[in-house]
Image (cartoon, rainbow, N blue to C red; front, top):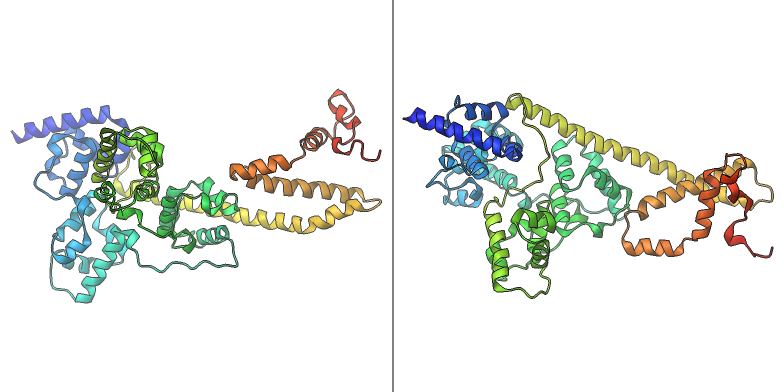
Length: 446
């Protein structure tokens, strides 16, 4: 009978896999592809699953035979309750299973010896100071926003983006931190920040607080509630400001649009509610929004940050190969980002040198008879400076772009582009603009 039930479970699981290909990436965080296939073929038993993994599998698939009843979910792990004896230490193991990790991975991250960790989990007598150390490290691991590490004080002699650039380069070998940063902002966006093309004020509050948790750079730190302190019950009762919800959405890597899609709500409803915008809202509509958020956050561990997952196929090799490839990929991302930053520094140095010389280059045109080399150098310098400033303005706020547009002499700009674009061509109908004088010089004492 037990074998028949296992066969039926395997069939249901196999059917679910065919119907939900978009869930495969999430599933592989629990088990590798080989293990998943064996479960679907009935050659691996569901009954031998670790409880934490079984709970996670149920949350992803909602298959009834995976449901665990009468047990506390690993999502509610609270190290403070562990300390006070309100939760069993075995909850830590269940949480490790739930997160798709191994005990070895966790103790390596928190820097605790295997024997010490095992004695702690088994409630065997160990030194009080060692117990405190283990619990402190576990708190920092599962609640990064409670990290007591000192912030890196801002250097007033350097711009914020220069300090960010230096932090990224200094942490080149810390692939985990670099990859956490690239989950907040893409490589391209980070490079724009490091170029100074975007202002610090353009970073949403939630993202800024996430960057502070990762980098400890003081200029990212903001006052007020941390996003991970969000309690929807307190939001509904107005015991916490609704803007904390907006911070949490941003902190978790979402915006109003992506969160609305996830919750099945209208974008405008999510934005107005989270940002506490004045609006006429019926009690039913407000209740629907609040219920959607309550249901969503009840599925999310407060110590687990949901991240937008990349679209990758299930690996064909065992778990060790998956981890190895993941590490290699992280190193590649880290290296490519820092290499690009190094290129920026080199290019900025070159451009800065050109700009320092530009006064002399441009001054040479005021000479009675500047040489050909002086003229060419002045034009190239002007183009370099123009290109550099264009990099800034293309991503700048609309107000700044409007001011630039109003200041530009459009006729001069059209004249320059038209003439220089074909400056090396022989005279023809395409180079007719060379026959005309500079528009803004017309009528100037001539």
